[in-house]
Length: 595
Ligand code: GTP
Image (cartoon, rainbow, N blue to C red):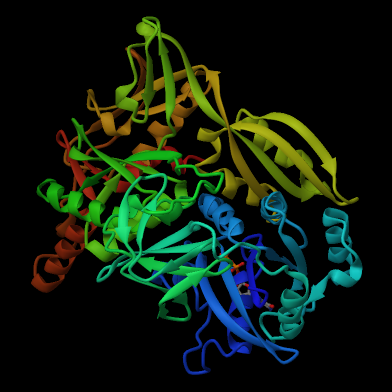
Protein backbone atom coordinates (compact mmCIF):
# COMPACT_ATOMS: atom_id res chain seq x y z
CA UNK A 1 0.00 0.00 0.00
CA UNK A 2 2.87 2.38 0.65
CA UNK A 3 3.65 2.43 -3.04
CA UNK A 4 0.17 3.44 -4.17
CA UNK A 5 -0.88 7.03 -4.88
CA UNK A 6 -4.48 7.89 -5.72
CA UNK A 7 -4.93 11.35 -7.17
CA UNK A 8 -7.26 13.35 -9.33
CA UNK A 9 -6.83 16.40 -11.48
CA UNK A 10 -9.14 19.29 -10.81
CA UNK A 11 -9.39 22.55 -12.71
CA UNK A 12 -11.67 25.06 -14.26
CA UNK A 13 -12.95 24.03 -17.69
CA UNK A 14 -10.32 24.26 -20.45
CA UNK A 15 -7.41 24.87 -18.12
CA UNK A 16 -5.79 21.76 -19.55
CA UNK A 17 -6.58 18.75 -17.37
CA UNK A 18 -6.99 16.25 -20.16
CA UNK A 19 -3.89 17.45 -22.01
CA UNK A 20 -1.74 17.20 -18.89
CA UNK A 21 -3.16 13.74 -18.22
CA UNK A 22 -2.00 12.74 -21.73
CA UNK A 23 1.56 13.83 -20.86
CA UNK A 24 1.52 11.86 -17.59
CA UNK A 25 0.44 8.75 -19.50
CA UNK A 26 3.23 9.26 -22.01
CA UNK A 27 5.90 9.99 -19.44
CA UNK A 28 5.03 6.83 -17.46
CA UNK A 29 4.89 4.83 -20.71
CA UNK A 30 1.34 3.78 -19.89
CA UNK A 31 0.64 4.32 -23.56
CA UNK A 32 3.09 3.82 -26.38
CA UNK A 33 3.82 6.60 -28.84
CA UNK A 34 1.77 4.68 -31.36
CA UNK A 35 -1.29 4.50 -29.11
CA UNK A 36 -1.05 8.13 -28.17
CA UNK A 37 -3.68 10.49 -29.45
CA UNK A 38 -4.79 13.80 -28.07
CA UNK A 39 -7.01 13.83 -25.01
CA UNK A 40 -6.79 10.12 -24.86
CA UNK A 41 -9.06 9.74 -21.88
CA UNK A 42 -11.93 11.58 -23.55
CA UNK A 43 -12.90 8.50 -25.51
CA UNK A 44 -16.44 9.35 -26.56
CA UNK A 45 -16.75 10.83 -30.06
CA UNK A 46 -18.75 13.68 -28.67
CA UNK A 47 -16.14 14.39 -26.03
CA UNK A 48 -13.49 14.56 -28.71
CA UNK A 49 -15.47 16.77 -31.07
CA UNK A 50 -16.47 19.23 -28.41
CA UNK A 51 -13.14 19.01 -26.62
CA UNK A 52 -14.79 18.47 -23.27
CA UNK A 53 -14.77 15.71 -20.71
CA UNK A 54 -18.22 14.34 -20.00
CA UNK A 55 -17.46 11.24 -17.97
CA UNK A 56 -14.79 10.75 -15.36
CA UNK A 57 -12.05 8.36 -16.37
CA UNK A 58 -9.62 6.37 -14.31
CA UNK A 59 -6.27 4.95 -15.33
CA UNK A 60 -3.39 3.24 -13.56
CA UNK A 61 0.23 4.15 -14.29
CA UNK A 62 3.48 2.67 -13.03
CA UNK A 63 6.32 5.02 -12.23
CA UNK A 64 9.83 4.31 -10.94
CA UNK A 65 11.12 6.69 -8.34
CA UNK A 66 14.29 6.26 -6.23
CA UNK A 67 14.57 2.63 -7.23
CA UNK A 68 11.02 1.71 -6.31
CA UNK A 69 7.99 1.20 -8.52
CA UNK A 70 4.89 3.16 -7.62
CA UNK A 71 1.33 2.57 -8.73
CA UNK A 72 -0.36 5.86 -9.58
CA UNK A 73 -4.13 5.81 -9.99
CA UNK A 74 -5.23 8.89 -11.89
CA UNK A 75 -8.87 9.88 -12.01
CA UNK A 76 -9.67 12.48 -14.64
CA UNK A 77 -12.77 14.53 -13.92
CA UNK A 78 -15.12 16.56 -16.10
CA UNK A 79 -15.10 20.32 -15.77
CA UNK A 80 -18.57 21.44 -16.84
CA UNK A 81 -21.06 22.30 -14.07
CA UNK A 82 -23.62 19.89 -15.49
CA UNK A 83 -21.31 17.06 -14.54
CA UNK A 84 -19.98 18.36 -11.26
CA UNK A 85 -21.49 15.56 -9.18
CA UNK A 86 -18.97 13.29 -10.90
CA UNK A 87 -16.16 15.46 -9.61
CA UNK A 88 -17.18 15.07 -6.00
CA UNK A 89 -17.30 11.27 -6.28
CA UNK A 90 -13.91 11.11 -7.95
CA UNK A 91 -12.43 13.31 -5.28
CA UNK A 92 -13.69 10.98 -2.57
CA UNK A 93 -11.62 8.16 -4.11
CA UNK A 94 -8.29 10.02 -3.82
CA UNK A 95 -5.74 11.24 -1.31
CA UNK A 96 -4.34 14.01 -3.45
CA UNK A 97 -5.32 16.43 -6.19
CA UNK A 98 -3.41 18.28 -8.84
CA UNK A 99 -4.98 21.69 -8.98
CA UNK A 100 -4.36 22.91 -12.50
CA UNK A 101 -4.55 26.62 -13.12
CA UNK A 102 -4.13 28.08 -16.57
CA UNK A 103 -1.29 30.60 -16.16
CA UNK A 104 -2.87 32.88 -18.74
CA UNK A 105 -6.31 32.89 -17.09
CA UNK A 106 -5.72 32.67 -13.38
CA UNK A 107 -8.12 31.30 -10.83
CA UNK A 108 -11.68 30.87 -12.05
CA UNK A 109 -14.98 29.92 -10.43
CA UNK A 110 -14.63 26.18 -10.85
CA UNK A 111 -11.03 26.24 -9.73
CA UNK A 112 -12.38 27.45 -6.43
CA UNK A 113 -15.44 25.22 -6.17
CA UNK A 114 -13.48 22.08 -7.07
CA UNK A 115 -10.72 23.09 -4.69
CA UNK A 116 -13.27 23.38 -1.87
CA UNK A 117 -14.58 19.92 -2.70
CA UNK A 118 -11.04 18.58 -2.52
CA UNK A 119 -10.36 20.34 0.78
CA UNK A 120 -13.60 18.96 2.23
CA UNK A 121 -12.22 15.50 1.59
CA UNK A 122 -8.85 16.46 3.11
CA UNK A 123 -6.92 15.93 -0.09
CA UNK A 124 -3.31 17.03 -0.40
CA UNK A 125 -3.36 19.80 -3.00
CA UNK A 126 -0.54 20.18 -5.50
CA UNK A 127 -0.98 23.46 -7.36
CA UNK A 128 0.27 23.46 -10.94
CA UNK A 129 0.55 26.50 -13.18
CA UNK A 130 -0.23 25.16 -16.62
CA UNK A 131 0.23 26.51 -20.18
CA UNK A 132 3.57 28.02 -19.19
CA UNK A 133 4.62 27.81 -22.86
CA UNK A 134 2.23 30.63 -23.81
CA UNK A 135 3.73 34.12 -24.03
CA UNK A 136 0.64 35.49 -22.28
CA UNK A 137 1.31 33.39 -19.15
CA UNK A 138 1.40 35.51 -16.00
CA UNK A 139 3.10 33.14 -13.54
CA UNK A 140 3.81 35.68 -10.77
CA UNK A 141 0.34 37.12 -10.74
CA UNK A 142 -1.38 33.74 -10.83
CA UNK A 143 1.00 32.31 -8.21
CA UNK A 144 -0.04 35.20 -5.93
CA UNK A 145 -3.67 34.24 -6.46
CA UNK A 146 -2.93 30.61 -5.62
CA UNK A 147 -1.00 31.47 -2.47
CA UNK A 148 -3.87 33.74 -1.39
CA UNK A 149 -6.41 31.04 -2.07
CA UNK A 150 -4.85 27.98 -0.48
CA UNK A 151 -2.23 29.49 1.77
CA UNK A 152 0.63 27.43 0.36
CA UNK A 153 4.25 28.51 -0.16
CA UNK A 154 5.43 29.84 -3.52
CA UNK A 155 7.88 26.90 -3.74
CA UNK A 156 4.94 24.47 -3.56
CA UNK A 157 3.60 25.69 -6.89
CA UNK A 158 4.78 23.70 -9.90
CA UNK A 159 5.11 25.11 -13.38
CA UNK A 160 4.19 22.97 -16.37
CA UNK A 161 2.96 22.86 -19.91
CA UNK A 162 0.76 20.05 -21.11
CA UNK A 163 1.68 21.12 -24.59
CA UNK A 164 5.49 21.00 -24.48
CA UNK A 165 5.82 18.54 -21.61
CA UNK A 166 7.76 21.05 -19.51
CA UNK A 167 7.54 20.28 -15.80
CA UNK A 168 5.71 16.97 -16.22
CA UNK A 169 8.43 15.02 -14.37
CA UNK A 170 8.21 17.47 -11.48
CA UNK A 171 4.50 16.81 -11.33
CA UNK A 172 5.05 13.03 -11.14
CA UNK A 173 7.72 13.38 -8.47
CA UNK A 174 5.52 15.71 -6.43
CA UNK A 175 2.70 13.16 -6.55
CA UNK A 176 4.98 10.51 -5.03
CA UNK A 177 6.50 12.83 -2.45
CA UNK A 178 3.50 14.90 -1.41
CA UNK A 179 0.38 12.76 -1.82
CA UNK A 180 0.00 10.43 1.18
CA UNK A 181 -0.14 6.69 0.59
CA UNK A 182 -3.64 5.28 1.18
CA UNK A 183 -4.51 3.87 4.59
CA UNK A 184 -6.81 0.95 5.24
CA UNK A 185 -6.74 -2.61 6.45
CA UNK A 186 -6.90 -5.51 3.98
CA UNK A 187 -8.04 -7.89 6.74
CA UNK A 188 -11.17 -5.89 7.60
CA UNK A 189 -14.55 -6.51 5.93
CA UNK A 190 -14.68 -5.26 2.35
CA UNK A 191 -15.55 -1.59 2.00
CA UNK A 192 -15.28 -0.16 -1.50
CA UNK A 193 -16.89 2.94 -3.01
CA UNK A 194 -18.17 3.18 -6.56
CA UNK A 195 -17.00 6.42 -8.14
CA UNK A 196 -17.96 5.84 -11.73
CA UNK A 197 -19.34 3.33 -14.18
CA UNK A 198 -19.23 2.81 -17.90
CA UNK A 199 -21.44 0.85 -20.21
CA UNK A 200 -19.95 -1.80 -22.42
CA UNK A 201 -22.45 -3.15 -24.96
CA UNK A 202 -20.92 -6.64 -24.80
CA UNK A 203 -20.13 -7.03 -21.14
CA UNK A 204 -22.71 -4.85 -19.42
CA UNK A 205 -21.77 -2.28 -16.84
CA UNK A 206 -18.23 -1.89 -15.56
CA UNK A 207 -18.25 -0.19 -12.18
CA UNK A 208 -15.12 1.59 -11.00
CA UNK A 209 -14.42 1.51 -7.29
CA UNK A 210 -11.88 2.43 -4.67
CA UNK A 211 -11.22 -0.10 -1.89
CA UNK A 212 -10.92 1.52 1.53
CA UNK A 213 -10.72 -1.67 3.58
CA UNK A 214 -10.67 -5.40 2.93
CA UNK A 215 -10.06 -7.28 -0.29
CA UNK A 216 -12.19 -8.15 -3.26
CA UNK A 217 -11.43 -11.44 -5.01
CA UNK A 218 -12.60 -12.73 -8.34
CA UNK A 219 -15.78 -14.78 -7.90
CA UNK A 220 -16.71 -13.24 -4.52
CA UNK A 221 -20.37 -12.73 -3.71
CA UNK A 222 -20.86 -9.02 -3.26
CA UNK A 223 -23.66 -6.65 -2.36
CA UNK A 224 -24.19 -3.00 -3.33
CA UNK A 225 -25.30 -1.55 -0.01
CA UNK A 226 -27.65 1.23 -1.11
CA UNK A 227 -29.46 -0.65 -3.85
CA UNK A 228 -29.39 -3.89 -1.84
CA UNK A 229 -28.60 -5.90 -5.00
CA UNK A 230 -26.27 -8.90 -4.94
CA UNK A 231 -23.86 -10.00 -7.63
CA UNK A 232 -20.98 -12.35 -8.35
CA UNK A 233 -17.71 -10.61 -9.05
CA UNK A 234 -17.33 -12.28 -12.47
CA UNK A 235 -14.32 -10.23 -13.39
CA UNK A 236 -12.28 -7.73 -11.45
CA UNK A 237 -9.20 -5.86 -12.48
CA UNK A 238 -7.31 -2.63 -12.80
CA UNK A 239 -7.75 0.09 -15.35
CA UNK A 240 -4.81 0.43 -17.64
CA UNK A 241 -5.41 1.84 -21.08
CA UNK A 242 -7.54 -1.28 -21.44
CA UNK A 243 -9.02 -3.14 -18.46
CA UNK A 244 -6.53 -5.70 -17.09
CA UNK A 245 -8.10 -8.62 -15.19
CA UNK A 246 -6.71 -9.49 -11.73
CA UNK A 247 -7.56 -12.06 -9.06
CA UNK A 248 -7.67 -9.63 -6.19
CA UNK A 249 -7.96 -5.90 -5.46
CA UNK A 250 -6.90 -4.81 -1.97
CA UNK A 251 -7.36 -1.88 0.39
CA UNK A 252 -5.95 1.36 -1.01
CA UNK A 253 -6.31 0.38 -4.63
CA UNK A 254 -8.66 1.32 -7.44
CA UNK A 255 -10.26 -1.21 -9.78
CA UNK A 256 -13.24 -2.28 -11.86
CA UNK A 257 -15.84 -4.98 -11.43
CA UNK A 258 -17.97 -6.66 -14.08
CA UNK A 259 -20.82 -8.67 -12.66
CA UNK A 260 -23.41 -9.00 -15.38
CA UNK A 261 -25.20 -5.77 -14.47
CA UNK A 262 -27.14 -4.63 -17.50
CA UNK A 263 -28.79 -1.46 -16.22
CA UNK A 264 -26.87 1.70 -15.34
CA UNK A 265 -29.41 2.55 -12.64
CA UNK A 266 -28.25 -0.35 -10.49
CA UNK A 267 -24.80 1.14 -10.27
CA UNK A 268 -25.02 4.34 -8.29
CA UNK A 269 -21.99 6.47 -8.00
CA UNK A 270 -21.23 6.77 -4.28
CA UNK A 271 -22.65 3.35 -3.36
CA UNK A 272 -20.61 0.94 -1.22
CA UNK A 273 -19.61 -2.56 -2.34
CA UNK A 274 -19.17 -5.15 0.38
CA UNK A 275 -19.24 -8.94 0.82
CA UNK A 276 -22.56 -10.70 1.28
CA UNK A 277 -21.08 -12.96 3.98
CA UNK A 278 -19.06 -10.46 5.94
CA UNK A 279 -20.52 -7.03 5.28
CA UNK A 280 -18.88 -3.84 6.44
CA UNK A 281 -20.63 -1.52 8.81
CA UNK A 282 -18.70 1.44 7.44
CA UNK A 283 -20.74 2.95 4.68
CA UNK A 284 -19.04 5.67 2.69
CA UNK A 285 -20.82 8.91 3.45
CA UNK A 286 -22.29 11.34 0.99
CA UNK A 287 -24.36 8.99 -1.08
CA UNK A 288 -26.94 10.84 -3.10
CA UNK A 289 -29.03 10.23 -6.16
CA UNK A 290 -28.44 12.58 -9.02
CA UNK A 291 -31.50 14.71 -9.57
CA UNK A 292 -32.39 16.09 -12.98
CA UNK A 293 -32.48 19.88 -13.10
CA UNK A 294 -34.05 20.55 -16.49
CA UNK A 295 -37.01 18.85 -18.15
CA UNK A 296 -38.17 18.84 -21.74
CA UNK A 297 -40.44 16.80 -23.97
CA UNK A 298 -38.80 14.72 -26.69
CA UNK A 299 -41.08 13.65 -29.55
CA UNK A 300 -40.38 11.70 -32.71
CA UNK A 301 -40.82 13.77 -35.85
CA UNK A 302 -42.48 10.73 -37.37
CA UNK A 303 -45.33 9.80 -35.08
CA UNK A 304 -44.94 6.11 -35.92
CA UNK A 305 -41.41 6.09 -34.47
CA UNK A 306 -42.65 6.37 -30.89
CA UNK A 307 -41.73 2.79 -29.95
CA UNK A 308 -38.34 3.18 -31.57
CA UNK A 309 -37.77 6.33 -29.56
CA UNK A 310 -38.67 4.48 -26.36
CA UNK A 311 -36.17 1.73 -27.16
CA UNK A 312 -33.48 4.29 -27.97
CA UNK A 313 -34.05 6.16 -24.71
CA UNK A 314 -33.96 2.89 -22.78
CA UNK A 315 -30.64 2.02 -24.37
CA UNK A 316 -29.23 5.48 -23.69
CA UNK A 317 -30.31 5.21 -20.09
CA UNK A 318 -28.40 1.93 -19.67
CA UNK A 319 -25.42 4.02 -20.50
CA UNK A 320 -26.29 7.25 -18.74
CA UNK A 321 -28.11 6.75 -15.46
CA UNK A 322 -28.62 10.48 -15.03
CA UNK A 323 -31.11 10.56 -17.90
CA UNK A 324 -34.73 10.10 -16.77
CA UNK A 325 -37.80 9.79 -18.95
CA UNK A 326 -41.47 8.97 -18.76
CA UNK A 327 -44.17 8.84 -21.41
CA UNK A 328 -46.25 11.95 -21.97
CA UNK A 329 -48.61 13.05 -24.65
CA UNK A 330 -49.23 16.39 -26.20
CA UNK A 331 -52.29 17.42 -28.16
CA UNK A 332 -49.96 19.06 -30.67
CA UNK A 333 -47.16 16.52 -30.91
CA UNK A 334 -48.78 13.22 -30.05
CA UNK A 335 -46.91 10.66 -27.98
CA UNK A 336 -43.45 11.35 -26.64
CA UNK A 337 -41.43 11.45 -23.44
CA UNK A 338 -40.79 13.96 -20.71
CA UNK A 339 -37.05 13.70 -20.10
CA UNK A 340 -35.00 14.98 -17.19
CA UNK A 341 -31.45 16.27 -17.66
CA UNK A 342 -28.67 17.56 -15.46
CA UNK A 343 -28.49 20.79 -17.44
CA UNK A 344 -28.72 22.22 -20.93
CA UNK A 345 -25.43 20.75 -22.08
CA UNK A 346 -26.58 17.33 -20.97
CA UNK A 347 -29.84 17.86 -22.87
CA UNK A 348 -27.97 18.81 -26.03
CA UNK A 349 -25.77 15.77 -25.69
CA UNK A 350 -28.70 13.39 -25.26
CA UNK A 351 -30.46 14.90 -28.26
CA UNK A 352 -27.32 14.56 -30.33
CA UNK A 353 -26.69 11.00 -29.24
CA UNK A 354 -30.28 10.06 -30.14
CA UNK A 355 -29.67 11.38 -33.61
CA UNK A 356 -26.20 9.95 -34.13
CA UNK A 357 -26.25 6.64 -32.35
CA UNK A 358 -29.91 5.76 -32.90
CA UNK A 359 -30.71 7.63 -36.08
CA UNK A 360 -33.78 9.24 -34.55
CA UNK A 361 -35.15 12.58 -35.71
CA UNK A 362 -36.73 14.24 -32.73
CA UNK A 363 -38.43 17.45 -31.68
CA UNK A 364 -37.45 18.83 -28.29
CA UNK A 365 -39.85 21.16 -26.53
CA UNK A 366 -39.07 24.19 -24.38
CA UNK A 367 -37.05 23.04 -21.40
CA UNK A 368 -38.18 23.98 -17.92
CA UNK A 369 -37.18 23.30 -14.33
CA UNK A 370 -39.33 21.47 -11.82
CA UNK A 371 -41.76 23.61 -9.79
CA UNK A 372 -43.76 22.78 -6.69
CA UNK A 373 -47.40 23.83 -6.57
CA UNK A 374 -49.04 24.08 -3.15
CA UNK A 375 -52.77 23.77 -3.69
CA UNK A 376 -55.53 25.27 -1.59
CA UNK A 377 -56.63 21.73 -0.82
CA UNK A 378 -53.33 21.26 1.05
CA UNK A 379 -51.92 18.97 -1.64
CA UNK A 380 -48.46 19.43 -3.14
CA UNK A 381 -47.87 18.80 -6.80
CA UNK A 382 -44.51 18.74 -8.57
CA UNK A 383 -44.70 20.27 -12.05
CA UNK A 384 -42.17 19.23 -14.64
CA UNK A 385 -44.40 20.00 -17.61
CA UNK A 386 -46.25 23.27 -18.30
CA UNK A 387 -49.36 21.33 -19.30
CA UNK A 388 -49.58 19.93 -15.75
CA UNK A 389 -49.91 23.46 -14.40
CA UNK A 390 -52.96 23.42 -12.10
CA UNK A 391 -55.93 25.73 -12.51
CA UNK A 392 -54.77 29.08 -11.04
CA UNK A 393 -57.97 29.17 -8.97
CA UNK A 394 -56.79 26.04 -7.09
CA UNK A 395 -53.28 27.30 -6.38
CA UNK A 396 -52.28 28.60 -2.97
CA UNK A 397 -48.68 29.35 -3.99
CA UNK A 398 -45.91 28.05 -6.23
CA UNK A 399 -42.27 27.50 -5.43
CA UNK A 400 -39.36 27.37 -7.80
CA UNK A 401 -35.80 26.08 -7.32
CA UNK A 402 -33.08 28.61 -6.53
CA UNK A 403 -29.33 28.34 -6.78
CA UNK A 404 -26.43 30.17 -5.26
CA UNK A 405 -24.17 31.43 -8.02
CA UNK A 406 -20.56 32.36 -7.63
CA UNK A 407 -19.20 34.59 -10.35
CA UNK A 408 -15.61 35.74 -10.62
CA UNK A 409 -14.91 38.61 -12.96
CA UNK A 410 -12.69 41.59 -13.55
CA UNK A 411 -13.49 44.74 -11.61
CA UNK A 412 -14.34 46.55 -14.88
CA UNK A 413 -17.29 44.27 -15.56
CA UNK A 414 -18.89 44.14 -12.13
CA UNK A 415 -21.63 46.59 -13.11
CA UNK A 416 -22.67 44.68 -16.22
CA UNK A 417 -22.58 41.33 -14.45
CA UNK A 418 -24.76 42.65 -11.64
CA UNK A 419 -27.24 44.12 -14.09
CA UNK A 420 -27.52 40.77 -15.79
CA UNK A 421 -28.11 38.97 -12.48
CA UNK A 422 -30.75 41.51 -11.45
CA UNK A 423 -32.48 41.20 -14.81
CA UNK A 424 -32.58 37.45 -14.14
CA UNK A 425 -34.36 38.06 -10.84
CA UNK A 426 -31.20 37.60 -8.80
CA UNK A 427 -30.61 38.75 -5.23
CA UNK A 428 -27.08 39.83 -4.39
CA UNK A 429 -25.60 38.14 -1.34
CA UNK A 430 -21.97 39.11 -1.28
CA UNK A 431 -19.16 40.82 -3.14
CA UNK A 432 -15.48 40.32 -2.35
CA UNK A 433 -12.37 41.70 -4.01
CA UNK A 434 -10.08 38.66 -4.37
CA UNK A 435 -7.34 40.93 -5.68
CA UNK A 436 -7.45 44.54 -6.80
CA UNK A 437 -8.75 43.55 -10.19
CA UNK A 438 -10.73 40.39 -9.50
CA UNK A 439 -14.09 40.32 -7.83
CA UNK A 440 -16.15 37.45 -6.54
CA UNK A 441 -19.88 38.06 -6.58
CA UNK A 442 -22.43 35.77 -4.93
CA UNK A 443 -26.01 35.92 -6.13
CA UNK A 444 -29.09 33.86 -5.44
CA UNK A 445 -30.96 33.26 -8.65
CA UNK A 446 -33.90 31.17 -9.85
CA UNK A 447 -32.54 28.06 -11.56
CA UNK A 448 -34.99 28.64 -14.42
CA UNK A 449 -33.25 31.90 -15.27
CA UNK A 450 -29.76 30.48 -15.42
CA UNK A 451 -30.14 27.10 -17.11
CA UNK A 452 -30.90 28.57 -20.50
CA UNK A 453 -28.75 31.38 -21.80
CA UNK A 454 -27.26 32.83 -18.64
CA UNK A 455 -23.77 31.55 -19.23
CA UNK A 456 -23.65 32.86 -22.79
CA UNK A 457 -24.99 36.22 -21.70
CA UNK A 458 -22.46 36.34 -18.89
CA UNK A 459 -19.63 35.70 -21.32
CA UNK A 460 -20.90 38.48 -23.59
CA UNK A 461 -21.32 41.16 -20.93
CA UNK A 462 -17.92 40.36 -19.43
CA UNK A 463 -16.13 39.97 -22.78
CA UNK A 464 -15.25 36.44 -21.69
CA UNK A 465 -13.73 37.54 -18.35
CA UNK A 466 -16.21 35.91 -16.05
CA UNK A 467 -16.44 32.43 -14.71
CA UNK A 468 -19.43 30.92 -13.06
CA UNK A 469 -20.39 28.08 -10.80
CA UNK A 470 -23.53 27.24 -8.86
CA UNK A 471 -25.19 24.85 -6.48
CA UNK A 472 -28.87 24.38 -5.58
CA UNK A 473 -30.18 25.97 -2.37
CA UNK A 474 -33.80 24.79 -2.37
CA UNK A 475 -37.22 26.16 -3.25
CA UNK A 476 -38.50 29.73 -2.87
CA UNK A 477 -42.03 31.00 -3.42
CA UNK A 478 -42.49 32.69 -6.77
CA UNK A 479 -45.23 34.30 -8.78
CA UNK A 480 -45.49 32.07 -11.84
CA UNK A 481 -47.98 31.95 -14.67
CA UNK A 482 -48.43 29.71 -17.66
CA UNK A 483 -47.94 31.43 -20.96
CA UNK A 484 -49.87 29.74 -23.77
CA UNK A 485 -49.33 30.11 -27.49
CA UNK A 486 -52.17 29.83 -29.99
CA UNK A 487 -51.74 29.19 -33.70
CA UNK A 488 -54.82 30.20 -35.67
CA UNK A 489 -56.81 30.14 -32.46
CA UNK A 490 -55.72 26.65 -31.35
CA UNK A 491 -53.61 26.40 -28.24
CA UNK A 492 -50.39 24.47 -28.91
CA UNK A 493 -49.56 22.75 -25.62
CA UNK A 494 -45.96 22.01 -26.62
CA UNK A 495 -45.28 25.74 -26.94
CA UNK A 496 -46.49 26.64 -23.44
CA UNK A 497 -43.96 27.91 -20.93
CA UNK A 498 -43.98 28.67 -17.22
CA UNK A 499 -42.65 32.14 -16.54
CA UNK A 500 -42.58 34.81 -13.89
CA UNK A 501 -45.71 36.97 -13.94
CA UNK A 502 -43.76 40.23 -14.24
CA UNK A 503 -42.13 38.97 -17.44
CA UNK A 504 -45.29 37.60 -19.04
CA UNK A 505 -46.16 40.62 -21.14
CA UNK A 506 -42.69 41.32 -22.57
CA UNK A 507 -41.91 37.66 -23.06
CA UNK A 508 -45.27 37.01 -24.72
CA UNK A 509 -44.58 39.78 -27.22
CA UNK A 510 -41.06 38.62 -27.90
CA UNK A 511 -42.09 35.00 -28.35
CA UNK A 512 -44.79 35.92 -30.86
CA UNK A 513 -42.32 38.04 -32.81
CA UNK A 514 -39.76 35.23 -32.78
CA UNK A 515 -42.32 32.66 -33.88
CA UNK A 516 -43.30 34.89 -36.76
CA UNK A 517 -39.68 34.73 -37.92
CA UNK A 518 -39.38 30.99 -37.41
CA UNK A 519 -42.64 29.68 -38.83
CA UNK A 520 -42.36 29.63 -42.59
CA UNK A 521 -45.05 31.25 -44.71
CA UNK A 522 -47.65 28.79 -45.84
CA UNK A 523 -50.58 28.80 -48.25
CA UNK A 524 -52.73 30.64 -45.71
CA UNK A 525 -52.37 33.32 -43.08
CA UNK A 526 -51.28 32.19 -39.60
CA UNK A 527 -52.25 34.10 -36.47
CA UNK A 528 -49.83 33.73 -33.57
CA UNK A 529 -51.14 34.73 -30.17
CA UNK A 530 -49.78 34.63 -26.63
CA UNK A 531 -52.20 34.23 -23.75
CA UNK A 532 -52.20 34.03 -19.99
CA UNK A 533 -55.37 32.25 -18.95
CA UNK A 534 -58.06 33.57 -21.28
CA UNK A 535 -56.32 36.90 -21.77
CA UNK A 536 -54.54 37.45 -25.09
CA UNK A 537 -51.44 39.54 -24.43
CA UNK A 538 -49.73 39.61 -27.83
CA UNK A 539 -50.37 38.86 -31.49
CA UNK A 540 -48.40 38.53 -34.73
CA UNK A 541 -49.32 37.30 -38.20
CA UNK A 542 -47.43 35.20 -40.71
CA UNK A 543 -48.75 36.30 -44.07
CA UNK A 544 -49.85 33.77 -46.66
CA UNK A 545 -47.47 32.57 -49.31
CA UNK A 546 -48.50 33.61 -52.81
CA UNK A 547 -46.03 32.20 -55.26
CA UNK A 548 -45.38 28.58 -55.99
CA UNK A 549 -41.78 27.90 -54.88
CA UNK A 550 -40.99 25.97 -58.04
CA UNK A 551 -42.25 28.76 -60.26
CA UNK A 552 -38.84 30.40 -60.34
CA UNK A 553 -37.43 27.36 -62.16
CA UNK A 554 -39.00 28.60 -65.37
CA UNK A 555 -40.69 25.41 -66.43
CA UNK A 556 -38.02 23.56 -68.34
CA UNK A 557 -35.33 22.23 -66.05
CA UNK A 558 -36.86 19.23 -64.37
CA UNK A 559 -33.71 18.20 -62.49
CA UNK A 560 -33.43 21.60 -60.89
CA UNK A 561 -37.03 21.41 -59.90
CA UNK A 562 -36.48 18.02 -58.34
CA UNK A 563 -33.45 19.30 -56.47
CA UNK A 564 -35.45 22.15 -55.07
CA UNK A 565 -38.20 19.81 -53.93
CA UNK A 566 -35.63 17.46 -52.39
CA UNK A 567 -34.13 20.39 -50.56
CA UNK A 568 -37.53 21.40 -49.27
CA UNK A 569 -38.20 17.87 -48.11
CA UNK A 570 -34.94 17.79 -46.15
CA UNK A 571 -35.76 21.11 -44.56
CA UNK A 572 -39.10 19.67 -43.61
CA UNK A 573 -37.61 16.74 -41.79
CA UNK A 574 -37.59 18.74 -38.62
CA UNK A 575 -41.14 20.07 -39.10
CA UNK A 576 -44.23 18.99 -37.30
CA UNK A 577 -47.76 19.45 -38.50
CA UNK A 578 -49.68 21.13 -35.69
CA UNK A 579 -53.33 21.45 -36.70
CA UNK A 580 -52.96 22.73 -40.23
CA UNK A 581 -49.75 24.64 -39.54
CA UNK A 582 -46.25 23.30 -40.20
CA UNK A 583 -44.04 24.16 -37.26
CA UNK A 584 -40.24 23.75 -37.43
CA UNK A 585 -38.17 22.39 -34.51
CA UNK A 586 -36.62 25.80 -33.92
CA UNK A 587 -40.06 27.21 -33.05
CA UNK A 588 -40.36 24.87 -30.06
CA UNK A 589 -37.21 26.44 -28.71
CA UNK A 590 -38.26 30.02 -29.54
CA UNK A 591 -38.27 30.96 -25.86
CA UNK A 592 -34.56 30.27 -25.74
CA UNK A 593 -33.73 32.39 -28.75
CA UNK A 594 -35.13 35.73 -27.66
CA UNK A 595 -32.82 38.72 -27.86
P1 GTP B 1 -12.40 19.84 -19.96
O1 GTP B 1 -12.10 18.40 -20.11
O2 GTP B 1 -13.42 20.29 -20.96
O3 GTP B 1 -12.74 20.24 -18.57
O4 GTP B 1 -11.07 20.67 -20.34
P2 GTP B 1 -9.61 20.36 -19.88
O5 GTP B 1 -9.33 21.12 -18.65
O6 GTP B 1 -9.38 18.90 -19.87
O7 GTP B 1 -8.76 21.06 -21.00
P3 GTP B 1 -8.03 20.41 -22.26
O8 GTP B 1 -6.91 19.53 -21.84
O9 GTP B 1 -9.09 19.85 -23.13
O10 GTP B 1 -7.37 21.71 -22.87
C1 GTP B 1 -8.10 22.84 -23.27
C2 GTP B 1 -7.39 23.55 -24.41
O11 GTP B 1 -6.13 24.10 -23.97
C3 GTP B 1 -7.04 22.63 -25.56
O12 GTP B 1 -7.23 23.36 -26.74
C4 GTP B 1 -5.58 22.32 -25.37
O13 GTP B 1 -4.91 22.05 -26.58
C5 GTP B 1 -5.05 23.60 -24.73
N1 GTP B 1 -3.92 23.34 -23.83
C6 GTP B 1 -3.89 22.47 -22.80
N2 GTP B 1 -2.71 22.53 -22.16
C7 GTP B 1 -1.96 23.45 -22.79
C8 GTP B 1 -0.63 23.98 -22.60
O14 GTP B 1 0.11 23.60 -21.69
N3 GTP B 1 -0.21 24.94 -23.47
C9 GTP B 1 -1.00 25.40 -24.48
N4 GTP B 1 -0.51 26.33 -25.27
N5 GTP B 1 -2.26 24.93 -24.68
C10 GTP B 1 -2.74 23.97 -23.87
